[in-house]
Image 1 (spheres, rainbow, N blue to C red):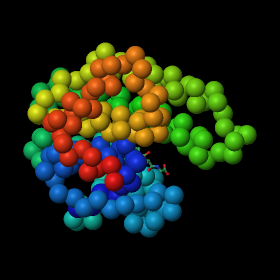
Image 2: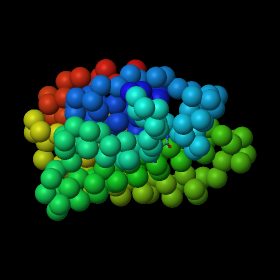
Image 3: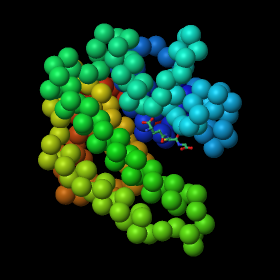
Image 4: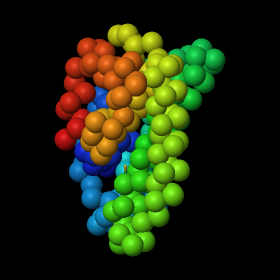
Length: 196
Ligand SMILES: N[C@@H](CCC(=O)N[C@@H](CS)C(=O)NCC(=O)O)C(=O)O
């Protein structure tokens, strides 16, 4: 199995960590989305990473579909069996991925527009969503122990991306969230392997 990825991509980071944790072996293939390589475009019309390609050549995207696939392949290592708990985990994952969507919208706004075309109100609107999301997470962190789930990986990946692109801009007033990565590392010491 292969996972097309890039080290900075938070959704790729989430998928690679979770697959490793669940015990699904997959080769990570570094992929430059800007170059539209056939290996990506032929597997995913959206040209986005992560994209997982199975040994049978079937492609699976996006990151949540991949995690649901990994969960099925590993007999439920990523999501709780209890429906109410599962919904909670799925919402946590959706929130963390949604924050990443906003962060990426800000990064892409600046990256893909000439300076005079950058629309600051759009950036501000995205950042407001990020602020609300981070405040919510600071007040409602998931219990974190040896048994991890998809929501933990989504949260870890989102905070890694946030610190990569918005270094030092998110910790103030959110002490619980700021300290959470240390807790996560205790239970998933391999996390740094997935940043490259
Ligand atoms: N909802 C998707 C988002 C994937 C996504 O936006 N990936 C970014 C990299 S972090 C990408 O491939 N961007 C390239 C592009 O949009 O052309 C998921 O969860 O996998």
